[in-house]
Length: 299
Image 1 (cartoon, helix red, strand yellow):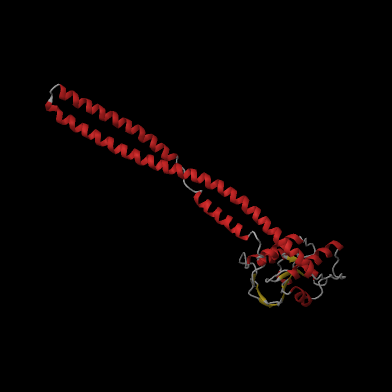
Image 2 (cartoon, helix red, strand yellow; image 1 turned 180 degrees about the vertical axis):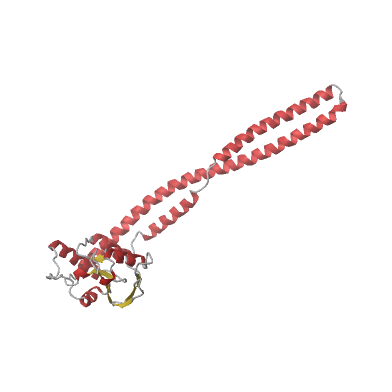
């Protein structure tokens, strides 16, 4: 792998470009630089800005080389597998499950129908009242005709026709509301089915993702064993590291050699003597390095 240079711009306007950038005198600790590396830019007006290729998934798991680093080889290999996008027999099934869940989510957002139920109930009572009113007008009209009161028949007939019209309009509104309610009930059933489908797809997605991780891990574990070339760190008078710390650093460097890290690798300055020279580290890891101060150190 060929290393590439990158650029750091400090809030003061000072710019650094190269394969090895020493920012120990900028008064920001490793945590700050990890944040800048992950987000690709400053988070506040007083934060430094890093111009480089985006970090790999591995760098989210193994963000910086520090004396207190803790390395999970399994997590690192899984991150490398995600970076590479290693194909597995479960990829098509996962895409299908993701598509199915997306479609189910879209169908699961149908609004409720409580208001429609109230509207139908109110119109049911309104229809009954309109029918009673029309029946009363029809009875009055019949009575007037029976007793020969022809002079009043026209006005009673007119009120009867008005009552019939009101009944027809109310029945039409009731029929329309009933239809809307039936549609809403059907949609609610579909929503319930969609929710159940979402849950089934979610379970399937989790299972498929686990199988993909296991498949990629099996591939990368064998490849890592066959290609890894351990680098034994040196013990120096300038820094005192325990055997456990040295073992963790050895593991981290070995994994960084194996993985792809396009963005710079953050190295705490106290480790430079243990990691030999920056040039040797760049050659070993195939990437640029960003030398940072220890946490809390102010110059």
